[in-house]
Amino acid sequence: MRLNELLACVGLDAAQFTNYKRRDQLPFHRQSEFSVAPGGSAQKKWTNYTLSDALRLQIMVNLSEYRSPDKATEPEISKRYDGLPPMAASAIAGNGEGNAVAKYGSLSAILNQRKDIWHVTMANASLHEGELWYGMDHFAGTLVECTDMIEEKKEGQVRAILFNVSQALQKVLDAGEAHAIPEIVDFIVAENA
Image 1 (cartoon, rainbow, N blue to C red):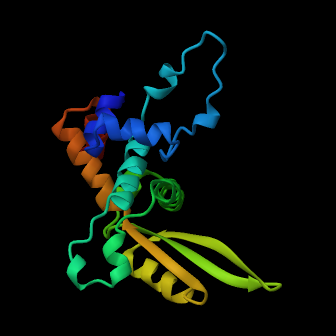
Image 2: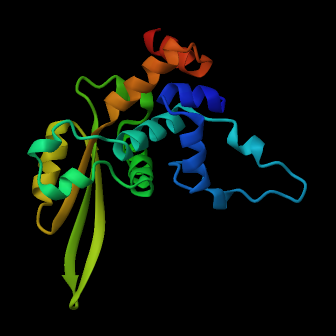
């Protein structure tokens, strides 16, 4: 799909996309992957997006642009910060989509699960030879499976970031269908066949 179609699927404006791109914060197409021969055009490499790209971007936007609905009752530190920094959200979005597809086989299979598919990224800290080491664990599954994983790995856990992959995918599909984006419409037709 073209850039304007990707943006329509995610509900992101071109200026914000350009800002993420300029800062190399997109969950796909790292600028370092694009080496263009002298006189060549990098533009062509930025015009062919997929449903997976749209899902990753939707997850990233959800995580980085999250606004708490209940600021007044949250601790003081939470009142200053809402979503994740875009670079962290981008990495988690890529892992989330990739882990869910690896576990269930395809975006179609994720959509066809009886229960929503979630993803959790857990940041962990531990002492190793007197130094504090950080690591990440990623897991995709139902909400119950994800919360069980959070509980199982709670020792040394600094933060757990949980999001609904199925809901983000459905949001992209609904927006793509509303804008009659061919790749999305074809996917929906294949799903309903």
